[in-house]
Image (cartoon, rainbow, N blue to C red; front, side, top):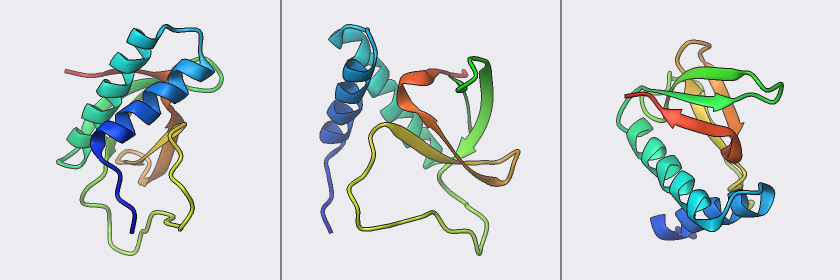
Length: 109
């Protein structure tokens, strides 16, 4: 099993954001580190965060990556990870959801 370091993950997110948008490298890197912190917080519990949906409206999400209900599994495969999207368990909808990393707005305090 090939494990990537957290720095590799952050740089991959930043590269994807930089290539897919018109933001400069500094802004892409800041957003990538915030996405890393979001994933780290979601592994410990439920986190409230915001992102822009495909239709342009803002979405308030309550997501987690821990304590997923029994019988529900994430789609795991042997293919390379996608750094263009982030998947999470939506506690309101009780289903997996994902969003484009370039559409991430902020973590609620």
